[in-house]
View 1 (cartoon, rainbow, N blue to C red):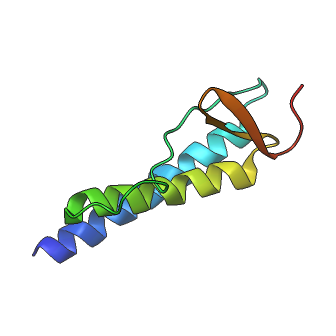
View 2 (view 1 turned 45 degrees about the vertical axis):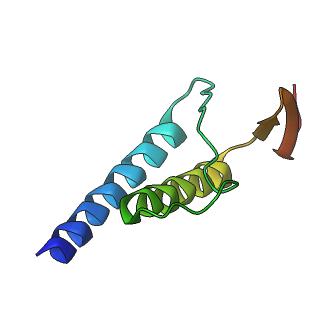
Length: 86
């Protein structure tokens, strides 16, 4: 039963992700999205935490692929991953 609920939840998340990406693409204003980077840490022991980490990473990748500018901030220093800072 849990697996079917998990698959349903991931389908819902994929739908919501598609809606978010479509809304961002359609927005005429400049949008700044701030997200956490969860892939540079220790892999969580907890299955739910690992699932969150993977789904957050998937969303971050989709956002960065669609963005004109992607910046990773480390120790307060911007590291441009895509595009150029204004």
